Length: 197
Image (cartoon, rainbow, N blue to C red; front, side, top):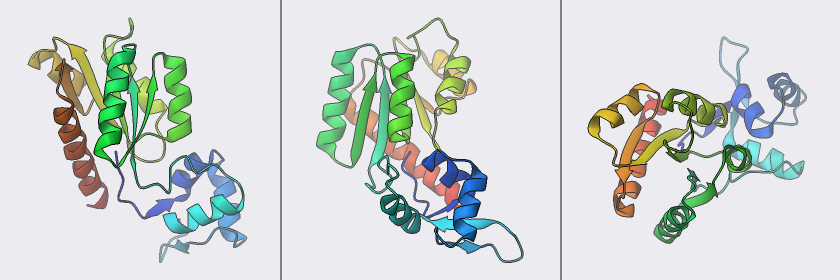
C-alpha cells in the first residue's frame, strides 16, 4: 500500500533497516539520524527524507524507500498471470513489481522490496486463508500491507470469508487488470487516509 507517511517511528525505522529499535534510538541520540522528539514525551520521530539520507550515507539498502512507487508482490504459481500483472502495472506507471511462486520466494521478495500490496492466490497451498494472511502479514515491512486474495471462481461468500480472515480485498479469476489497478488504488488511498486520521 502506498504510504503517504513522511515521518516514521523508531520501530518503523528499525524494521526498514533490519535492526533493533534500540539501535535506531542510539543513532538518533548520537545525532547520526536526524529527527525530533514528541513534545512532552521521549518518543522520537524520523522524517523519511532524513532516513533516506542516513541510509545512503551508510550503505544501507533503500529497498525502494525513496522511489515513491507502490511496491507490489504477486504470490502465484501461474507465471503467465504474474508476468501479465507485472507488465500491466509497470506500463501503468508508479509500480514496482516482484513475483513469487513459492512461500520461500515470497519471503525473500517481501524482505527485498517491503511491499505495500501483496496479491496472493488463496488456493496456492493447503494452508487456510487465515494462516496465509498471518504469514503474509508477518513478512510485512513497517508500512501497512494491503492484502488482496485472488482465486478462480471466487464467490461473494468466499470473498467475505477472506475479508474475515484478514484480507483487505478480493478478486475472482480471471480478472481484468484495469479492475485490479482500480482496486489497488482505492485500497491504497483508503489506507493513506486511515494512517493520516
